[in-house]
Image 1 (cartoon, rainbow, N blue to C red):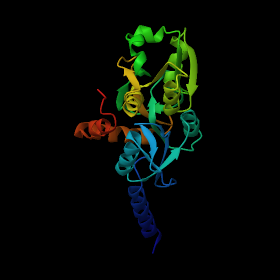
Image 2 (cartoon, rainbow, N blue to C red; image 1 turned 90 degrees about the vertical axis):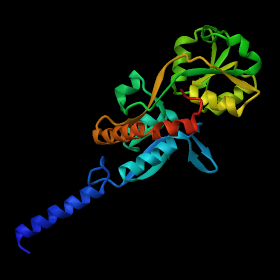
Image 3 (cartoon, helix red, strand yellow; image 1 turned 30 degrees about the horizontal axis):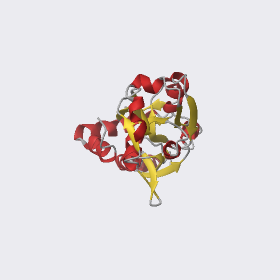
Image 4 (tube, one colour; image 1 turned 90 degrees about the horizontal axis):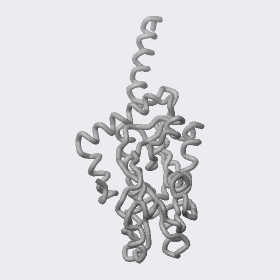
Length: 255
């Protein structure tokens, strides 16, 4: 084989290798999408029967199929997701993360897939005390939220009169609410609606959004190819109706 023939063979081999890799990966990367997820927040992501399930778990599986790669779910506390992304321990955050200005300074967000807001969960017998949003925000009672979330930020910034407690998971907050250790729990609306269904007869939501937020996936600012690929997948699902079907499967009360 002469030099010209060897060049042709090498180019052909490189083309085959490149075509076999996911859109966003370079030739030096493995065909694995490492998804940072925090499976403590049903119905977005949670453990059930020794398996991570929920909306983001299904999203990650579908995104892996769209990109032609395997998916590795990396279970992390919510507050450690962005540091893990920035240190390249994961490739993408798929954990019901709200888009905020502070987070947007650190990472890039995909096209939002769902609009949510902070909502209050209270004991059923106390519902009349929190009939209006102003009654919630101005309350002098003890309010709780999940730590390292927009709920915690809202509590610190706006609930000037309330005593405050923060919990590692929504379930821990709901437990404190049931045991009368707190009087209201502020969480993203999907979590509130889920917990209300799980504690029907005991806990109930106050159906008023205290904020409006967009949920999206996070990637490193340098990972433009992955961001483009993720947005293309979302656009395809939206056009086909698959996105709405997946959301309503897990969050039937969503608007």
